[in-house]
Image (cartoon, rainbow, N blue to C red; front, top):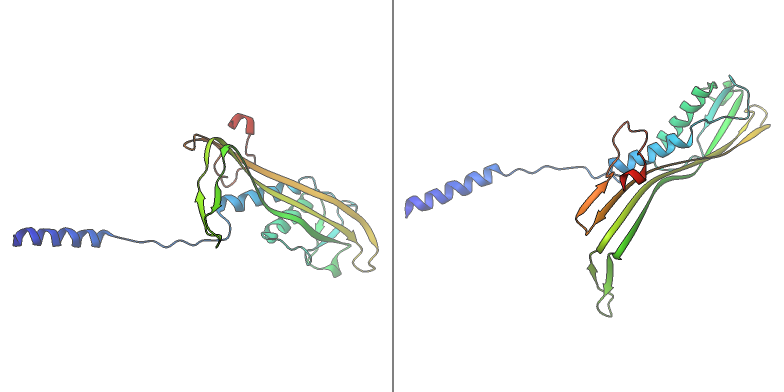
Length: 205
């Protein structure tokens, strides 16, 4: 009996010794969500042109550019201007033109289509306590979309003379996934770093 107890104690001790825990950070956005927004920003600034001649020294004023991931978007805009042949100025005093930016959107949208019953929250008493009923579907489709919209205007930094406006720059990056009978899933689930095109949604169907 003593031997059995000793064996049980040894087994329990070994199990406790084998236990381990890890801690993970929980940022406001997942990596896939961050990449969706970044790719949307990249697409928005493709072919960006300003209403000033090539080679003009431009200062990018982002003082009124307010959005999550704003730093990435501003860098993408600066890169697009450099690729287009404009010179980037470090300050407005050394610039021939100032490009003032504003963000209409830089975020995510999610759309879900369900053939069946979507998730429901059903009130059960007068205190508005609810019971959550999970999705009961034959088929569902999920779209996650990064959306970016930027615009701005250009003026002479020394005189304030307007030089022209820049039409809204719009970009979207979408991934789509499908599920049948809440079990069988296919289609793109995440965005891979460096990926430039999510592919044809119809081919994912």
